[in-house]
View 1 (cartoon, rainbow, N blue to C red):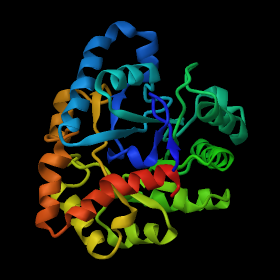
View 2: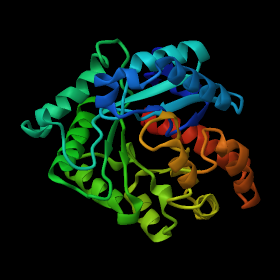
View 3: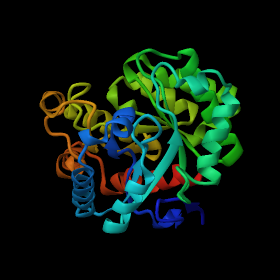
View 4: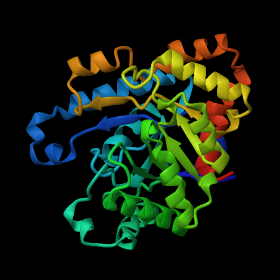
Length: 314
């Protein structure tokens, strides 16, 4: 048995149950939340988070993996309050989210200094609490591997090697950044079986996806509902094809939804992702996967066994 850290304390990996592998309670412009708190209604944010969690619990979800980290508004006390109210297992991360440059403090310091900060969240606790990070989050997007992004990737790899915590790497599938992320992790000595390349499902290029899978990584098919990047139908068809080709055991399903999100105004988001919700997977996607020939056992593997195996290293 392997214990997985949650905001309420460690849980046996075999007890995680049905798991959403990539969802957020909050995605917030972090400096604004700190400097202009009057712009936010914290109780409304809390209510939205609780209602969203209860919505997925009605579909049997027991665990949510939440990759909100520094620069995305991470607030583990908020998460702990939601977990206490709902009973959900909330698995949280350490990391620093940037597509381009780091905050000045880390611009002037090396990757090992950043790794030290990540390790502190894993071994000591996050934001002065006893809540510990269960995984490491990093990101590479359309700007590619900038010097500071490379520093974050290498720091994430070094924190993994020091602690054993797995890595989740936000990727930009259109520019195939998952391959570059994997290269850097491998240069640092990471066993790629500990790495999840998130947002791989933004592409239906089977050549790219299988090139990633051949490296041994996990892949996140985790943005169902974000129609502006790839339609639900194409996403579902890609998952079905990969299942038919024997890759069920390396995929995780999710939606990358945020219960509260201030990055995009609601009217604009409705154009980009009109049906997006944390329950879309259960209401629409799973029935469509069944129509495409994906079996119940395969669904269970992607929603239960695979997230637990990635988190536990089993």
